[in-house]
Amino acid sequence: MKVDRRHAFRRITMGMVTVLALALFMGTQATSAQAPSPINANDVSILFPLPNSSDMSGFISLADLTDSNGQRLLSDQAFGKFISAAESDDSKIVDSLGGANQIAFPPEIKDVNTWFVAGIRLDLGAPGLAPDVMAKFGQIPQLRLILQPVTRTSGTAVRVHDRAAHIIFSFASGPSAQQETCPVRVVPRIDADMTAFRPLLDDFVSLRDDLTAGKLGSPVETGGPLNVHPGLSGPDQQHMRDRLEVILEKHLKASQVTALAVMGIPKASPEPWIFLAMRRNPASDTVQTVPSPAFDGQAKAQLLKFVGPEQVLPEPKSDNQSEITTCFRMPNTRVGVSTAELLRQESSKERNIEVTEIIADPARSHFFNTDCVSCHTETRLLLKKVPDTVIPGVDVSVLPRSRWNVRNFGWGFEGGTFKPTITRRTATETDEVVKAANQLLIP
Image (cartoon, rainbow, N blue to C red; front, side, top):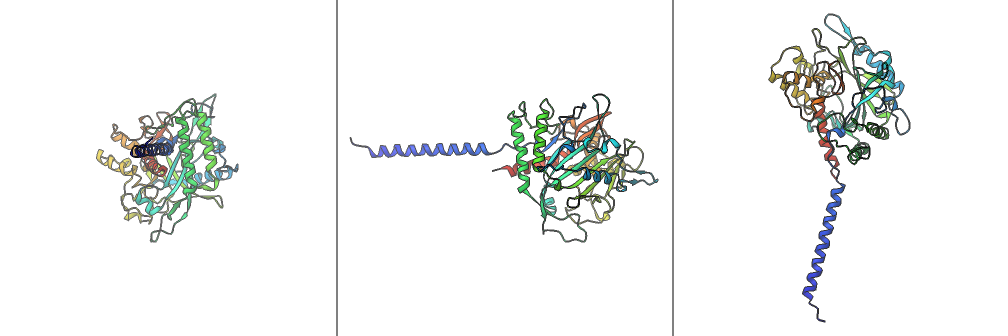
């Protein structure tokens, strides 16, 4: 039989094209399947619901957490040093009339077992992820535990105390040689240890995927504005709590705790609130309070109160309108804003918006150029002056509305009780983290 070679060649060619097209299609499908879905704000800023009964099995106590070797992430000794530093004279602030206030803890909350995780925040780089900030300060990936004391009262009732602690676990490889030349430097440049941090991020992504797939109970979608984490707000809270504990204990070590912070009040008074930062040396297990760069270089604590004059002490000297730098400028050469101005005197709507917008922007304001009180009051002051303001990225139910609620991310006092609280400042920081994390996760 005579073979039409042209027809045969055409059939072979078409077959090869079909196989090639199928291969390309399958390859595209495989790549698409491997690419992770974008993570959401609630995947990296995880807020627990408010405790409402003495059954705390759905919550994580600081005393519960150990590392992979069974060592407590914060030992009784280290916790005791934290309490001592918080109650030391470094937290004492004296007003112009000689009145003194300092942090004090009731005996029942000096027990590490009473401190529970109110929130978990994953951060790809402190003090900020804006290019100008990273160029000067480097990148310190961190996981931050926000803790608040909860004690049992009569029957099944519990009491949440208006005090908070931040414990920061750093993933840093060490100082870099790239530093500015100046007489006094705020902090050396630090580079990220992504080899250790990336598996932690991957496990938070896996947690999100398992929640979506219903592997921890009913399927949970984590998209939408920041709120109490949807995986912790329903009947499956225990499953997610246990998974979070596994992730924390897998990746965190006591030696990573290099920074802490506290917000406390006097023992028998609802105010003032006093903010204080600390540094920990893991090698010697020492805890030291640190001066705030937003003051005169000596003051360590800052006070906020609403009854009587001198609502903010000491008066901050912010530098958040100057060029980003690690050099410590003298107070009279700094250019910046703080919410002390808005608390001290009545301000216009326009000025209120301008000041709070600068404070809420992590590209301009961070720990090394802005005071603590400003970051803890900007949202409430904005909503007081402009109550119809829409805060992008935060569910309206968790926005602070009362002046007595000075929480950024946790359980704040409002309306005679406590409520889960998230500020605009938290949302803008989280948005930076989400964008950087999704960029990192691209195959």
